[in-house]
Image (cartoon, rainbow over all chains, first blue to last red; front, side, top):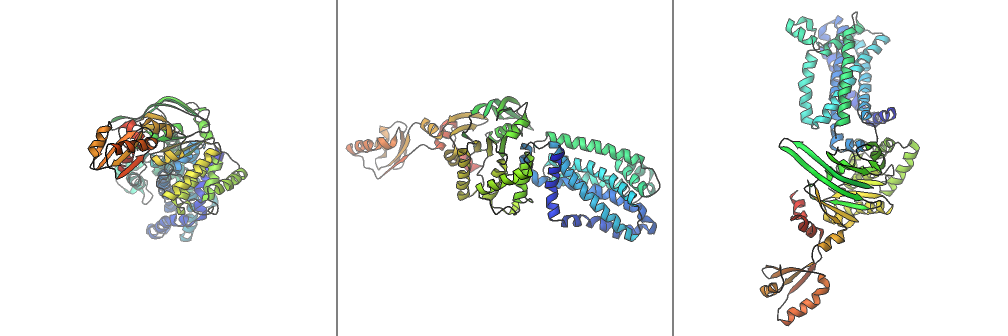
Length: 237
Length: 310
């Protein structure tokens, strides 16, 4: 099982290692937010904004991960792998592992870049912050692959993603504080587990409690991985 | 190597249940090369997907490579090779990498897999392509790579789903030689095809499937013998006189066609007789029965037309 996961991870990691340009392209979007949106929040905004940006990276980075599975379904790669004795769980976890590793690397680079603007963090805070974001990535990545395996078509998958990710992001308060809005909008954000994760991520770099966010992210991981594993065990790709 | 009993698969669709495979029984002996022949949609791939653990049967059972399909699918997977219709190489992977991962998924060590890969690259004429991205290979090369990936763990039973689809004639020939070679090495091969020439060239034995049921079984020659006789086509201005001498004769302008057993031997005598009654002939053709005739007699439809329509 561990060996299988490592093999699946290495297999999907190899093209990235051979051609790391993709990692740099993945940084374009958060860098734009950092350079073109961050300054709007003023000099004191960085401590507040950068943790939210990390959560946003986890959301966008891993939710779209399912796209990398679709060509492998179409060209018969998944089918070939499913006839080998390789663990079905490894087929999922190995892939998620790649996306989470890339996310952590990109998150680290973004934090370092943000320091040039005035973001301040200790090594310990950065480690905890990346850990929380990585857990979120595991949850979202698992669900993304499971949905990709079910819908099988790019255009369906793309519309499923935009219909879910945009509201999740808007209601998480990564861009502006939800408490600035009307009551109904604030309460709507409270039922979004991602909002609690954002709060917890901010509490790592600022005073505050990480409790609810940690509970949310652990719940998301359990549900996401359960759903992903069940789908990979069942679905005949 | 394969014992299938009452194997069936029903799919639930919006328009109601569809019985893709309606309870098939068959055996494949060790070392055989068995062709599973039928038009598109006959149930070939569904049967193959059940036998390779990709699809749960809705009824029936099977023992594949010594392991029970229902109770020990992992055992089946370890002992079979499978080459799917769609291929199976990751387009962004390099040839040697993809082979090595595949070998290691089957539990081979890094060392063992490298040795095995060198062998197979040689055997399937892929040497020198190790570092190429799979997306840059030709159709024939990709197909040979697919088969090499199916053979890394030395399975004694190999499943091939429509192996030569979308290949040019030369690559098909080449692929057939490779498949024959596998059989000569003692591998049991079970392949599906809707090409008559492929079934004819490769198979020791054919199973003919139509509408989810097996409608015929035998070696290509046996099956052809079941079609009664060879087709003789005579060109003559006195077509109606000739037609009156043979039951089931079909006249088409100045052409008469009919079937007689052992046409090549019967023909000289036949021609003498016709000459004696004053029939003038300007052309003579004898056709051995083809698998298409076989399919036509078994199902009432021509596989060739089916294949063209698809």
